[in-house]
Length: 66
Image 1 (cartoon, rainbow, N blue to C red):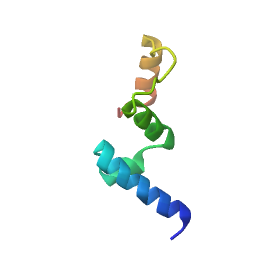
Image 2 (tube, helix red, strand yellow):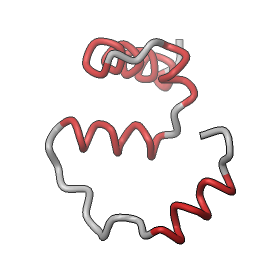
Image 3 (tube, helix red, strand yellow):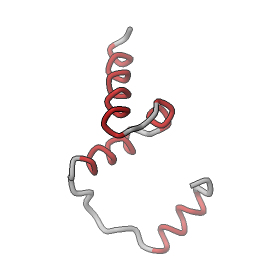
Image 4 (cartoon, rainbow, N blue to C red):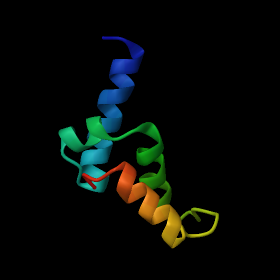
């Protein structure tokens, strides 16, 4: 098994135990999404301003499936 596969498998298991994510949720998440969830779970500040109404509307239009 490659080093990547070993590390990814370990991280998937940690996401399942720590975050309660089933494997399909882990494998569908982007690295940025996983990092954001880990930072939030660790209590780290997300930084920046919250999204305004225009950004939320644009994101809803770009991603209608949620």
